[in-house]
Length: 178
Image (tube, rainbow, N blue to C red; front, top):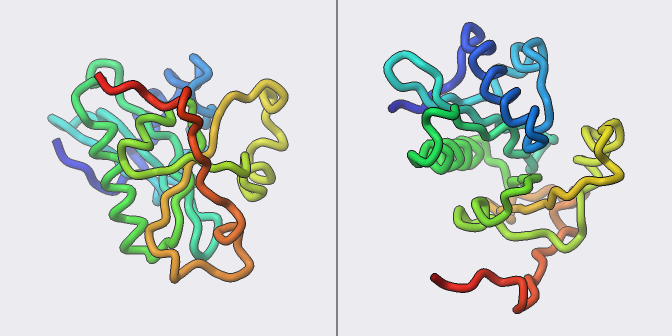
């Protein structure tokens, strides 16, 4: 399995994988055209010439990017591809000198295992303006924001990077060791 930059010809495969999760309410839907327009933001996991998973690293400007559309094909779930895609996106963010990564998800524990921390402040204003304000599920949204500081010294002074703080998970809510 190889992780690499997505190609425009793979937009349909990415759309198919993302759409399966969007139909379940797990990911925000993306049209094929949206994926094609943002193809440079996507990484794909490819095995035997077939796209097995994808992730997008979408910039919010200097210092902040969001992990989006992290999805694995049904026949490849449980194989570690999701973690490898996330790790590759984090490395790409570091190369691009991004100070903080944001993830908005219903799978917080997955992101915590990769070093992300829950945010106390709720959804960042940038996310609300970009996606939440026009989302039909905004009133019933159960997603949470998590973040990871890659290079806090690169954070622009005007950014939300200085106002978001990691949340303290109440003791009762912490996972019980197996």
